[in-house]
Amino acid sequence: MKLEQKFEIQGGCELKGEIKVNGAKNSALKILASVVLTKEAIVIENFPFIEDTQRMLEILEELGAIIEKDKKNKKVMIDPVGVENGNLQGELVKQLRASILLVGPLLARFGEVDMTYPGGCVIGKRPIDLFLNGFQKMGGKVEWNDDGFKISSDETKLVGTTIFFPKVTVTGTEALMMTAVLAEGKTVLKNCAMEPEIKSLADYLNNNGAKIKGAGTSMIVIEGVEKISAGTFDVIPDRIEAGTFIMMGLLCKSEITVTDCIPEHLGAFLPVLKNAGADLEIGENYVKVKKGKRLKATSIATHEYPGFATDLQPPYTLLMTQAEGISLIHETIFEGRLFFTDQLNSMGTAIVMCDPHRVVVSGPTSLYGKKLTSPDLRAGITMVLAGMIAHGTTTIDNIYQIDRGYEDIDERLNSLGAKIKRI
Image 1: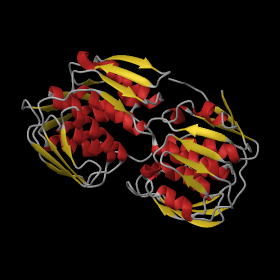
Image 2: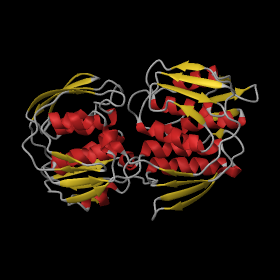
Image 3: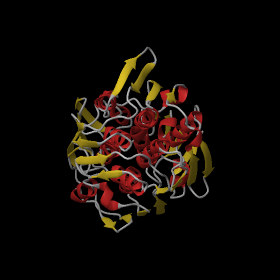
Image 4: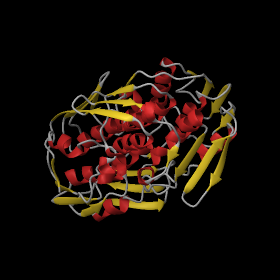
């Protein structure tokens, strides 16, 4: 783990060139959780070696998996033959909220999981009750203790059922979909999330013995099977990273090309940018940002996929500080995700918070370098972009939060002409 590191950024640089999008964090984490459904080895390609995936690999090693890393070729091989129980105790679980994804597959495989409370970033409350309620409906029994919980099944197998999610949940959809593949009978999940990462995971599981229909729609039907095999999984491109880099080009008024991405996976994001006046060339697997006129203020409300992604809201809020006019940013997914705007205001932006879910942004404004602290992953990368367009020097503390989701981000942006030092 990288401790006590910070970024020092010199603003005002023009960028030029191509930047490749890495494998999706939210795809890699989910396939890592699915590893424990089987005794067979899996090869994961286009793997992002970021802090969150490294922590998940370490948790799998603690469970007994054998792992080989090939960073040069962005590949990981995992043999789960040594995984023999559902013991999810320890410090690593406390660091990573995505560790909750292991509970369902381990419960389905071994009938018992003992887990400490999962950790993660600070935005919102992000409760785990949606997961536990689903496991209980499939026959799991939960016992709480001071450090976490124990969940077990009296039967040899969990039992299929119908589960309606009270609110759309990406990780909840994925967790219960993975759990249901080894359950007895049919499971129907309703009001599901529809993200591309969910369909990618379902396609892989289906190729290895699962019977999942409807992934990528609001209703998923899973017929339980006796066993799941393993094979090779190719992590899809990170749509959040792609969107972030596109906005970076617009913020820096620079011509850059974002490659190895799937523009179709960006949902409402690209139409919003077009409405705001962005000059973009959109290909099958790239987006080229061209120099254009100043953007016009365009209001958004975040929404589940294919709506405007909540993870792209923080950099979009920054983008609107450079647009002409007044825009309303409505964050509908996570409470508290807009609190980082106080730090942008310290740099010179004009952002007024109406309530924890809405801010009004006036633009354009000039930014000036300040000392900042990254509160979470997406606010952190937004502060990097703010530093790149600010006058003077910006220092960002707690960059572990940024490294959680962006691999070697300083080196990759510097290759385009940015001036970022890791201290």
